[in-house]
Image (cartoon, rainbow, N blue to C red; front, side):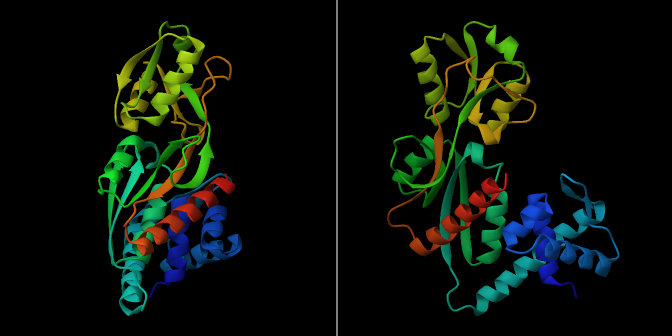
Length: 285
């Protein structure tokens, strides 16, 4: 019988890509997490992770184990929920801004679903402005999205600088009018970028509009123009344009906004999971 504690440490290392970050997430010592993985490897007689000074990655045997490990922990969560007096139940509709989905969110959702198997979680991914409109219509219970400085809505998760990116900054800056790659309205980053360019009198034109970050990133990697993104979410293959070459952009804030009338127990449980996870990742970055 495999040890569930060891499997939990194994999954945490896979999610975080680091024994140190996995230990912080689990509230354990790094040596303890390392021992859990070593004992799991010994029990199976296979090497599950390749380790170096920068990152821990799954071996082929680790990949084969991962899905089964998740199923075992999910089953444990279901059993605990079945016999718990205070287990959460119901439906929670979560809306997340497009540019946040590929960063910290997957691990948070996996932990929440495993811990609360009786909660039906529905995920909507869209632009921040669209999510707020949907929430106003009663279609979303909790929004994780961007707000502009001075906007009082929601509970602050963290503040982030916006920066300009391009595949070849020198080439992009030599083109007039400045070629922009942007989300369609209503987009917080688009509005901030256009206002900053307008204040400085910089001529611009939109060369690519797409509601998907993957589409915008592909256009930027193809050298079509410049893209605005939070610094910590810098897409690979792009370079940050040096300060002073283009107008300085104001920061944005990522916030959690609950809907009035939503199930407060469900909203609170997921909000605390997101806050704890994101702040832990940022403090260790």
